[in-house]
Image (cartoon, rainbow, N blue to C red; front, side, top):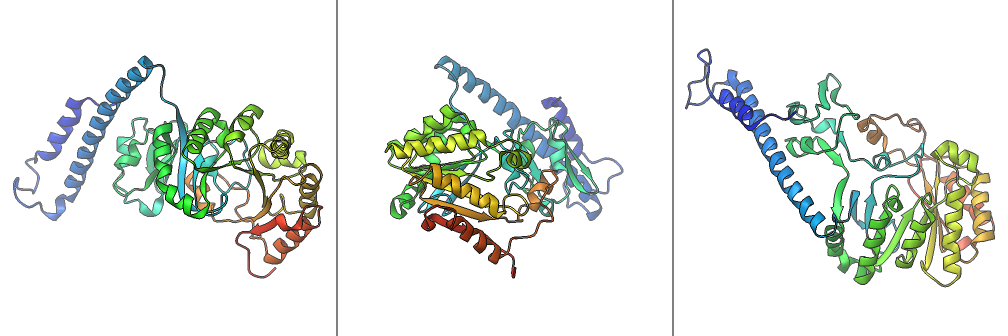
Length: 392
């Protein structure tokens, strides 16, 4: 339960008032031995600031909520993980990629584990922490505590309110996920339109899985098209058919992940079989074949050691493209595994199944790319990228 203004102010006054035993002479320079008192004073000031910001925020939030309800319902919002500018990997040209939070798959190798949960989360960055314990002091849910290992987050108690993020003086707590209104997000990305126009780029929505927030994704893409922005949807394919069909008329490009051709293996590795994914992929292909939108389809296959890196898997995906998507796929990217996300798992208190996995060698990637080119597809569409280990 939050403190009252009176009790918070009482604590503040107590912190300012010198005790008879104190070596501080009130109104003069404090002596070194009383640094702790001033640390406590700073914490009390932070508490007051936080409590006031929460009360004021609650007042305006409730007022805004009433206003929205009286005007026909709340504003449309989405939980966005990140907005990445100057991207060159999520479609043609210079792009701004909007990463939606929440994914329908749970890939065991996921390089962005912070995108999996649809909930707003926080994480602690140890090398920034100064040990002031402000985060645990201000947390209304008492979800943060200090141990010898650092700050511990009780993720069942954490509500993602972000008070600890705002009050941490060192920026050691970060919030993963922010609520954006349609108007605000559109205004944010349209700032980059000069880059889009000069490079043939645009806006890509990805995740996570953006089509888990289908109404917002559709409305966002519609507004972008009205402003003449080239659009792309990056999807894992595990989404409702009507969500995918809804955004296709407003998408110039679909980036589609096809990870493992064997559905049993796919389920073991990602938490779901690939039947819906393949069906949605063919749905995009039919739209392109009919001369409708999107106009381009790029397939992306992550090459993960011991999971998707077999020649049988690559050949199987190639056979599907050649047999059922002929002429529909403009690019097939093989994306080499990287192990740069270890710290992300640590900060989220999760185990990573691929923590000890090695990078794939360049020769191996070249061989798999050659396998892809010989699988029946147009060899010109096959590309590979990513960091590789030195040697084989």
